[in-house]
Every structure is written in C-alpha cells, then in structure tokens.
Image 1 (tube, rainbow, N blue to C red):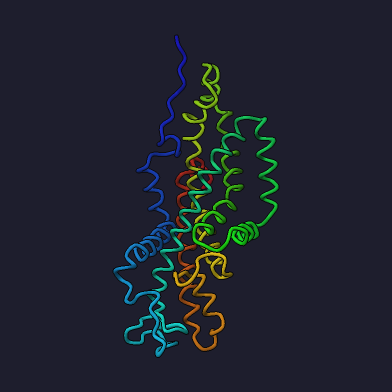
Image 2 (image 1 turned 30 degrees about the vertical axis):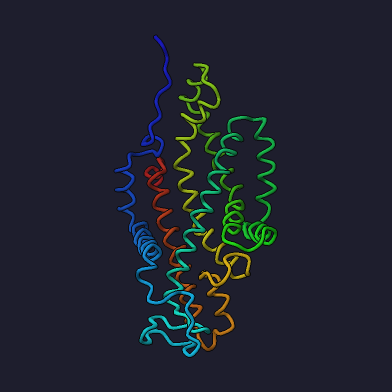
Length: 295
C-alpha cells in the first residue's frame, strides 16, 4: 500500500471552516463592535471625496478657529480656516493606506525569512540572531531612524514602518514553522522524499496563515500610530496632504484656543486602533483551534 501525504486544506489550516470562523466572530460582542467601527472608518475613507464638505487643503483665512457645529463647518476649522471634518476624512484615508501597505511589506519580507529560519537550522542561526538584534530596539526607534535617513515622504514612511515590523513577523512565522514541522503529516511527507521547498509551500505555509493573519491585525493599528507619529515629527506625510499626525502637530500650539482641532484627529486615531484591536482579538480566538478548549 502506498503512503500518501494527507492534503492540507485552507479550512483545515485555519482550524475551522470559514462559516464556523465567521459565526465565532459574530458571537463575540467586542469583536463585532470592532468590526462595526472598522466598517465606519473604511467607509469614511473610501467615500471621502464624496462626503467631505470641503477640499481638505482649501483655506479660509477669514474663518480661523470656527467652533464645531458652525454652519458650513461641522467640526470647526483650524488655524488656517481649513475644514477639520474634511481633513479628518482624508487623514483616515492616508492612515489606512499607509497601514495596509506597511502590513504588506512586513508580510512579504518577514514570512519567507520566518519559513526559512524555522525549517532549515543552518539559516536559523543567522536569521534568528539578526532578528534578536533588531528586536532589541523599540519599533518607534527603528521607524523614526529609517524615516530620518530615507527622507520624509509617504513611500518612505511605508517602508520604514513595514521594515520595523519585519522582525516580529519573522519571529511569529518561525515559531509556527517549528511547531508545524514536528507534526505527523510533515514527517510523512519527508518520508516520501518530498523536497523542502514543496513541504514549505504545500504544508507549512498554509498552516501558518492563521498566525500571519492575526499578526497583521496586530501590526495594523501600530502602523497607524507610527504614521501619525512620523507625520507629527515631520518625517512622514508632508503638507499640504492631510494626515492625522499633521493635524495633531498643527493643533498642539492652539490647544487653549481650539482644543477641537486636536481632539478630532486624536479620536479618529483611537477609533481606528480600538477597532482593529477588538476585531483582531475576536479573529484570533476564531482562528485558534485551541481557543474553545481554553474557555
């Protein structure tokens, strides 16, 4: 009788079918709260050109510091008379784009390195040591340093934030790879003389997807905060492009006269990060095959 390696389906990889995963997420009230928050945020970002009452860069020098709920300016204006509501919509759009691209960079770079480190011991010695060195530095130090070296721009901010998260992604994928390669179906595949590349692509990588997805939801809010920080320091998005970080930077010197100019972008950042954290926790519990055993 010929032994064959058991097929690995994506639904098995995630520890449950997609339908069951979604039911578990829906049963989590905090997770659904986060999902609703994210839906509102994404809708605001996508429809910003349609729902923004003003051009985000349009100035009204005769109308600075208009209080919220002023006719024509729902959330007031800043020191240059720019509509805060419109700038917030476009700022959310920029934050989500930078966050998503940063996550993509960290996944594309970190996942292959984590797979290689977890499967081949001789590469693990090199990759893990370099990862340990990178993890010794806080995320913000790496991001600010890379952005300062490469120069302020949207693309450089994406690269700086994404690269700063690569070590964490490598560590997560490496750990999952070590766990999966000790499973019986991988041992069976090795017995059948399956090559390392085939085992990684057909068995290890699909079973790492749940960890990668969860780690992406962890990186996303941190990337949003990172973009706001870089823009606040003048190392990220540059004016006149609206950014939540730039709005906070411009408003800090007018906190006494116009606190709403800082409160609105601050609340937007908090809503984005809270939504991703709540939904990410629910998604982690749904994708974790041992979550039901722990409860």
